[in-house]
Length: 154
Image (cartoon, rainbow, N blue to C red; front, top):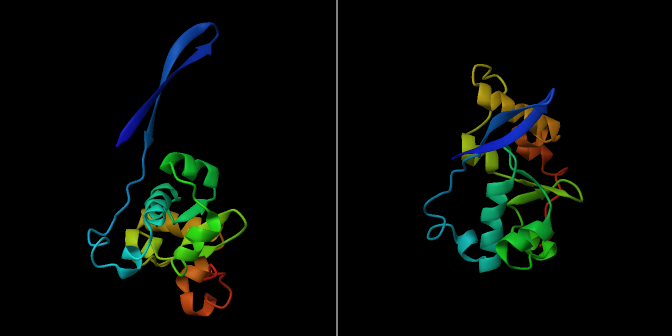
């Protein structure tokens, strides 16, 4: 869905309209998540809502910058960091005090990203973003990186 933002600009005393287009990212959601994903069925309602908020509001590689005040406001539920992170143990990596990464986000949304696929421009931009977050080595060599990754505590 596209949204138009209309504003005005005053240049040398003449008002002109500015129209900018903002494109929302679209996300795939598995249609069987409610019936065939046992991990998801076991979550309480609040954590399920948080999960959908998380996959809807992360960046293009699955990194979300924490804002629990905002997510609680939007969901009309008090979302407690430690509770939802414990419930999502194994699905997310804690990157810092304020950022998390959805572990399987890229593979689910785009398929396996490979650095040698230079003709696939969207994949190259995702790889660049993973590198900017310091996640490319963890993503591309998950078994080698498991000992360095910080999982949520159960």
